[in-house]
Amino acid sequence: MEEHNQNDSVRGEAEEASGSSASVEGGPNLLDKIIATGLGTGLSPFAPGTVGSLLAFLIYFIPGFHETFIMLPAILIFFAWGTLAADRMEKAYGHDPSRVVIDEIVALWISLLFLPHRLLLALMAFVIFRVLDIFKPFPANYFDRRDRGISIMMDDVVCGVYTNIILQLYLFFGK
Image (cartoon, rainbow, N blue to C red):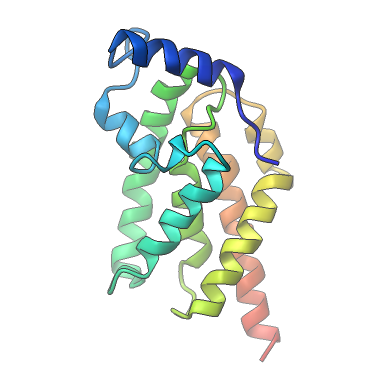
């Protein structure tokens, strides 16, 4: 159900065939591509957003990463960096290219922020986030229709915040 931008594929194939590292002035460099594609997970031919979210899930389980003093700076740094990289990728590959998954990565970390470090809770966050990311409740749908890197990041951030709220409520009322 993930949207695949046809221009993304056509432009990407043309760029890769020419060996160019940027298809337009101010376009993405290699580091932008590595960050924006989540270490290449966004290049998956099937469900790149889900594969990028899976990378975020796995990183969450690196010992110590779940600690707020590590996660919060990681979220802020990759949000800022991802916004810039996503902006450049959009200029090169068209509106919200499917290969950009840094937004899913940051948003899944937001989904897990301030929650107990438990596998079941993390799996719940993964599923809830992916469902919300597909349906894009307001204001995620507002950002999804806009251009620029900030909008690419924000539609998923909204879904990450919603996921976190749902799980916080589950923990508060479900016990």
